[in-house]
Image 1 (cartoon, rainbow, N blue to C red):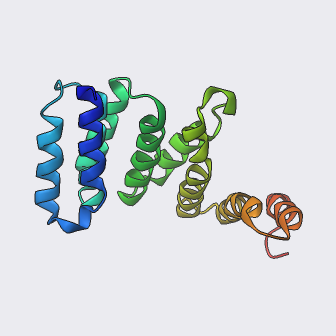
Image 2 (image 1 turned 30 degrees about the vertical axis):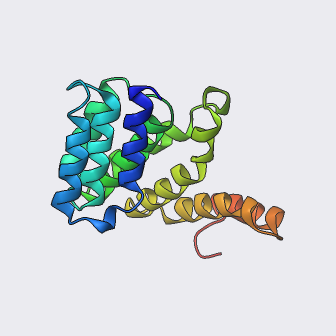
Length: 174
């Protein structure tokens, strides 16, 4: 096993039960792992951002996510960073910026994403729906959320997808 694989294994093991630690202890454990990497390591910055995010420190999470993205974070972690950054920004009262980030993420052609990144498409839609609702775009939010849900239903897929699209064209209150 390479050093990178071992590091990834230890990061994954820590994330298996973050609630087993007090928030400050969890952040410290992630910081210890991150310290094993170069200071500008995008994956380590992301993991630290996620630790701050999941323990109630969204301001620091935003800073770390942005640094990770600026350092060229790629793949699944990049997509997760965008989703989590947008969510934190929404929670910090910046839903318009959240909408911008998630709309751009949603617009990435599927052929430019790997299977793991594509699997997070519904998460992009879900967090975009939340941000849209926070900006007063309730019908668009409902349409997006219902459209994401439609393929998962055992029945009524076509009907729900149709109704989700119709929310965008029907006048309010219909």
